[in-house]
Image 1 (tube, rainbow, N blue to C red):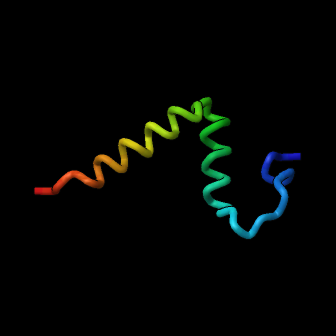
Image 2 (image 1 turned 180 degrees about the horizontal axis):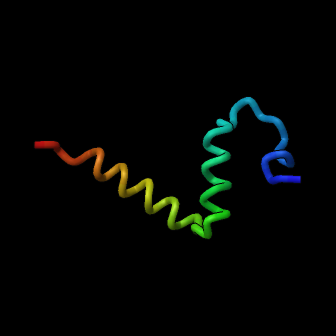
Length: 50
């Protein structure tokens, strides 16, 4: 049984988000590496574009 199948159905969970986190985990990324990635994306988004 996959992790996704073990999750209790929750209409507040985004299935794409859950799949992304499962792939990140299965790829060997730590929680902190995922957080850092999103922090860097946010910083790049906030930078003024020329």
